Length: 165
Image 1 (cartoon, one colour):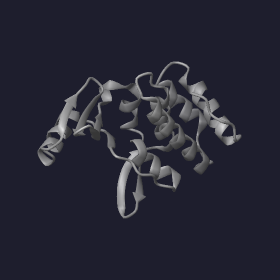
Image 2: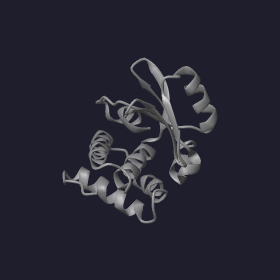
Image 3: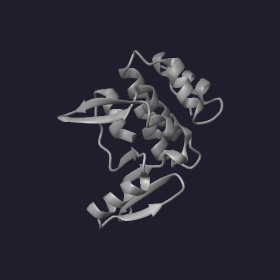
């Protein structure tokens, strides 16, 4: 998820500090990461298991039980080649919905929301084949009425208008 998934749909990769993943078995994945990277501090919350390197987020394991969207995105995937690596990421509309969820979260820092908004715009600009009905369906998993809001955001980007969220 996050920037790495967005990179798969923009053709213009951007740097990021952390790696975000949705995992079927978060506790099993966390155990493996803790063994591989014992220097990282693990924090287990209801929606994510976060590994920190000092004050810096390093790895986020999103729990499918923490969000209907995350649970759905485990099933809606595609394989893409990033450089020489074949990776599995959510489908285009799912990555947009993930960015939409981050942009709309009342718990997310403003600076991070702006980065998510930039990713959202870049994804829309790079992809003319977005299935608006499917994207709206994914955004409805974020909150009731999210589908209509995301559809408007996509239309605004396509029309060259500034997005507001």
